[in-house]
Image (cartoon, rainbow, N blue to C red; front, side, top):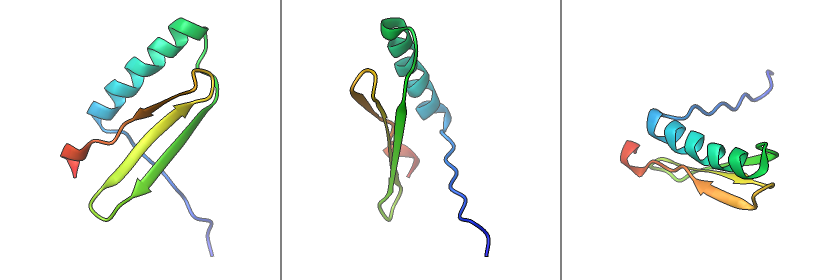
Length: 67
């Protein structure tokens, strides 16, 4: 049996929001640091967020309009 492959691709709206957020973190700290991604399927779509351990901040990338 093959290993489970998990792959997430951001849509254009999510990508733009993520890039803006990362830009602010880089401007403040000079680097991105460690990120933890969390996705939660909820039956009608997927909740998606990313947490910056450096900035101690979480960004909700969930695009409810794409459900």
